[in-house]
Image (cartoon, rainbow, N blue to C red; front, side, top):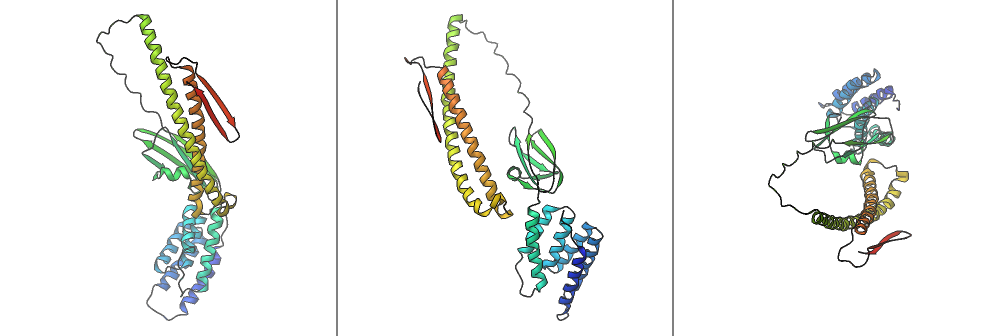
Length: 332
């Protein structure tokens, strides 16, 4: 972790005091804000991070200038609260400049931007996929969190985190540890629902059916069911190919844009959502093609093994492959 020099900020406070006292005296809260920041600097030297953050935030509440906010962000980072520090650094450099600001305030904004970029590269990221159904509630360290945000990747502080998912009475959780700069992807699998009780049997007598007739009926029903499943599988496979193709085209478009904005896939926070969207489209394209291939293959097998009773010719299925494409042809 980067080391800070708290004494440097004691000097900055001194400069700020001189600059503020250079103007006419008035009944404004500047002197109280400076005293609070000076107390915060002393607490920071003694590694009382919580106390220092409290003082710096109180000073900023009285006089909203970049120096006080930058000191608070520095204390947050030193205490290990990297997510809060990253947000605070960004808030500092995005402040609208005031013409009355001194050079010290503008330098504080520039320093905040540099520290934001360095800290962004050190942030751990946690990706959580929930399987076994849609969760009613997802928690990160005991606080309700957006499941979609966790699925696309959420910035977290270094250390251990507990992730939990709930769907009705079903629940699952996992503890995961992350180091600085590390990205971890985990799966939470919800337990299966309790098996439904078996339906009561029908006590009414059924007409007797000869064994040959029953066998013929079962075979006919099995063949019809197999062919129906075959066409359904073909439909699912075709839909998968369409989804894979469309998602792939969208992903290619996003990739060309990200290659310019995010060299080596190293994106700043404003581009994270675009990067996550590219990853989702790429994953969706892969899943689409896999589902398409499996669906078409399964459909072909089912139709091959369950020929229509009215067809005079044997079922035929042919796979044709060429660079960049795969097609099926046949007669059933």
